[in-house]
Amino acid sequence: MKTHWLVFGSVLALAACDNTNQTTTNTTPSEGTKTEQTQREANDKAVRAQNEANEKAAKAQNEANQKAAESQNEANRDMAKEQAKANETIRGANTDAVKARTDFEVKTQKSVADINNKIDQLRVKAQTAKPKAKNDFDVAMQDVDARKAALDTDMRTMREQPQTFDTLRAKVDRDVADLKKSVDTAGSKL
Image (tube, rainbow, N blue to C red; front, side, top):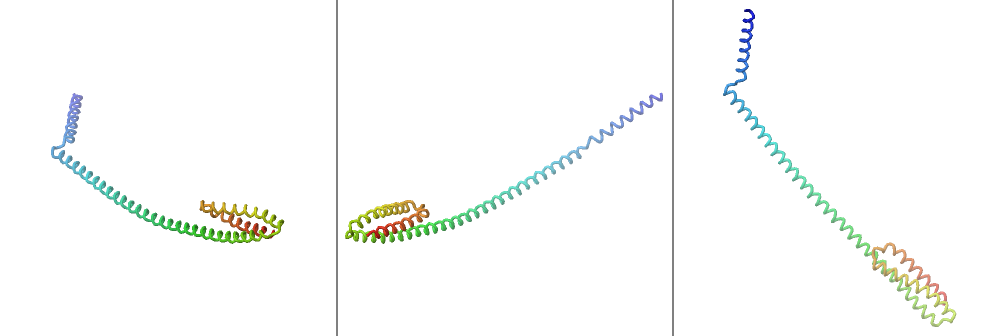
């Protein structure tokens, strides 16, 4: 019988424990509503916070985009100013190059005109020279004519291809000097 009582007491204790669990898990209707309301408020706060964060991020992005656009515009203005300066420098250099080429051509044409005058004077003198001297003069004049033709070719090339001015300038100077020597040699034959 003692065993019965023991079993009966155990069953009662179990029933009491089970009853306690049901009371703690079953909340009153007002407590459930309160929990749901708190959860909704927390959700609303989270949504508002997320919206504010999104607005701040969008505003910051717009400001960054605006600053980037302003920086790009300023860089474009600076680049345009520098390009204008470079263009001005290039135009100045081109003007200087054209002037140098023109001055050189004028100087060379003056030298060639002086040489042509000397050649004309020598040809007049050769008309009255002795036959041997005239023959030597005519042979020397072939070299003069060849050098004059080379000078004319170089001058024409320099005019037609201005980019070759620097390379042809020294050659034309040598052509003029060689032509003068050749004319002097021809003149010495008379």
